[in-house]
Amino acid sequence: MALQIIVGMQWGDEGKGRFVDLLSKDAQIAARYNGGDNAGHTIRINDDVYKLHLIPSGIIYPQTIGVMGNGMVINPQILINEIRELRDAGIEINPSRLKISYAAHMITPAHRALDLAREAHLGDAKIGTTGRGIGPAYADKAHRIGVRYLDMLKPDLFKEKVTHILNETNHILVNLYNSEPVDVQKIVKEYLEYASILTPYIADTSKIVSDALNEDQLVIGEGAQGAMLDIDYGTYPYNTSSSCLSTGAMTGLGIAIPKDVQVYGIAKVFQTRVGSGAFPTELFDEQALRLRGDGSQQWDEFGTTTGRPRRVGWLDLVLLREICRLNGVNALALTKMDVLSGISSFDACVGYGTTASPVSPLIVDESTAPEYQTFDGWQEDIGEVRQWQDLPEAARTYVTFIEKFVDVPVKWISVGPERNSLITR
Ligand code: GDP
Ligand code: IMO
Ligand code: MG
Image (cartoon, rainbow, N blue to C red; front, side, top):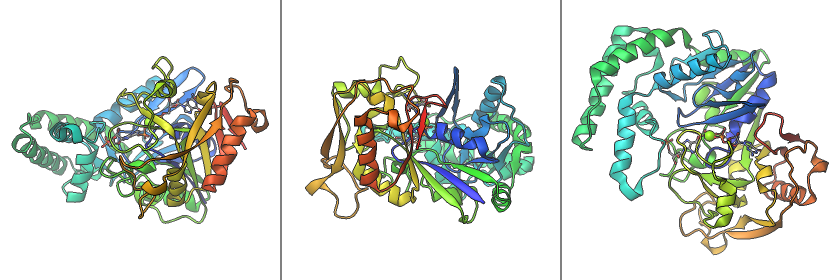
């Protein structure tokens, strides 16, 4: 039995979706274990571009079953739209190949309104959330007042629970944040319709995934966001509200630790971040504009979910080494190598010197001052390179330096957004 976990090594958008797609070629199950529609996972196959927010990226291959784990918070309206969009694109979605955990929690419009109200209230201290209601939905789960997908199976009880959570959230919206309440009756009616559509998809996904592993099937665990956005080890409080680490796959799918588990960490060769929070290697000069792009290319650094320009900076190897340890990464995939082509030289952070936290390298703030090593660039367009030895020497030197520094082998290097724009070692 084999579980292969895909986990983001930075602040999200590392290119996880395309690697889940890649590994799903031989998989029976592709299973998302955390987050909600704050995620945006892009897959590009020739001219077809899929942007998935909730449904696992492994769904493009026709033999896979997509599982949405109990670790997720799922907005039913967004899910129904995503099912429709995939069907329109010719991807068959039906209850035999998409399974929603009965223990997954539900996002409502009131969670979204509360997310936005809290952010507005925080002013300059705002987290910069995606506004999708993620934090409030996980908070209600922890408060034990959340609505689960299981509740959809009993319409009367479901109606009661949705009404309760909407009223409770309205109370906070109105009395604490001076915001407009949501229309409870209208939403309850809509949610009863969503329940009638989604009920056939609700399943005991914990058993489905465990059985698959026991039958020696290949399961891909798809992490959303990235390690630096993890609720426990991310740059708190500027992070998301779920367990984004590889270990979150076990709790977020409801499985025991399998005997055969591989963890693949996905890292860009530079770094990006959307929203607020420390970013020690952030760039603000013309190099930043170059790494981000102007938005004219589909892969330029603008959010898949919100369209916000992403903050950009050099690769931070101090963080990457610690994040590899934290996730038990067996092999790394480095993405966006092609974007570095044409730069005369570039930097990577190799230490924090006296500004390092005495407690953990993961504790970074505005005072953290990176120490850089400078690398020679290369001028060649590497988009068509498929063999390691055909990469320019300067690119190979950079990759070899990274794997030595973090002590994890680099198994893949991607040189373009397409499924096949990839070097496998
Ligand atoms: P995810 O959230 O980790 O799945 O990543 P996103 O899909 O949000 O963002 C990654 C972006 O980079 C997408 O637009 C991908 O199509 C694109 N991409 C992925 N790998 C590469 C690569 O090697 N080169 C280039 N140019 N783009 C890439
Ligand atoms: P994928 O899976 C990049 C960021 C938000 C914000 C913080 C909290 O595509 O990599 P939230 O809405 O989760 O409460 O926002 O987390 N964030 C992401 N950044 N990629 C993502 O997902 C993200 N999901 C959340 O920008 O800083
Ligand atoms: Mg993304």
